[in-house]
Amino acid sequence: MPLLTALSVSELRAFHERIRNDYDAFCARGLKLDMTRGKPSSEQLDLSNALLRLPDNIDHQLKDGSDARNYGGSLQGIMEARELFSGVLGAPAEQIIVGNNASLALMHDCIVFALLKGVAGSNKPWGKAPKISFICPVPGYDRHFAICEEYGIEMIPVEMTGDGPDMDEVERLAEDPCVKGMWCVPKYSNPSGDTYSDETVRRLAAMKTGAPEFRLFWDNAYALHNLTVPRREIMNILEICEEAGNSDRAFVFGSTSKITFGGGGLALFASSPANISWLLTSMQKRTIGADKLNQLRHVRYLKDMAGMDQLMELHRAVILPKFETFYAAFDEHLQGTGVATWSKPEGGYFINVNVLDGCAARVIELAKQAGVALVPAGATYPYGKDPRDRNIRVAPTYPELSEIKLAGEGISLAILLGVTEKLLTEQAS
Image 1 (cartoon, helix red, strand yellow):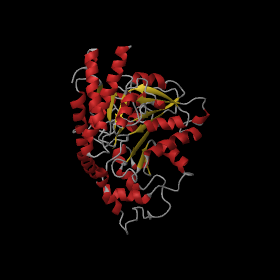
Image 2: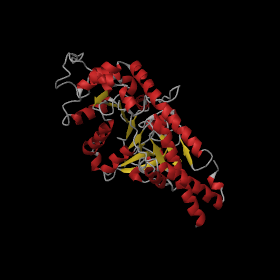
Image 3: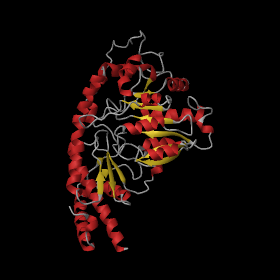
């Protein structure tokens, strides 16, 4: 494919006309493909169907002698589940809380409790401060940003570098007492695919903050979601924070949403003893307890870390061909054109695409018209505003493998058409 920015006006017009014809032919297929959210496919969900038969009709007694069918027990979740996920979270069972299916709910609750009551070590609720700000690595997770926007928390974007966020900028911003926290997806970040380097983790743990109660919201959603071998690993943020003398700094979140069932999994939280006590105290008026039977069925099904690793290998076998098929489609249609770059992540659920500045919104509109739904333009930035209008998040896991090549072709044609429209407009002006 030609480098489009090097074409003459007449060559670009001819290329644009050819792409328009190809695009119109693609639209005529009447496809409806969903690439919006990072959801597991039905094939992945089927991997855990054995959960639906667990626990069996006489298996409801926990090892502490209590009945999982009844009220009571610790708000932390059953000990068996906390022990099961200790290795995933990098914390002992005593420093883990297991909740219901959405880790986002735990993140939301931590924000709300901090606003209303403060956090461990606060001298007043965050909501009493004249201004609250969060550092937000970009491109990032739209649902993180939505929580902040809902509660009037100012979001300050910081660009990702390949090893995590720009730490010079993070350290500068963190000196402001109004900055109370930071969103982090440290492994296979959504959507960039970045994995935080050891240096980044150490600097986050040790940096000076203007707010003594500053918190890292460490959303390790893709801790086990590897696409390559050997696997990427990250440092244990809880240990590194403790070594740096900031043992209360990190709130670590995780879930089984993309391990077992998104609609029936477990949410996970780990932190320092002081933070665990703070969250449990805050939760006391909110709930009697989590779904102990669901926790028990996960313990029976997953068994141990080896069981989780085995299941995640089955997931990898399903989704890796989808990523590779999508790369092949982009390579076929876009390689050498100079109109876009795209990630080839080592894990996670997303492919990060950057098109020429000023083109993402138009590309997403064209893709939608062609029958390929993508997340709205700007969704990966605070307030839905991508300052360069270039970032597109692609989620290849949910469609069937047979649909991925078509989706890649449709998005490629939308990119080529949208970019050539802009280039022709610029040349005419």
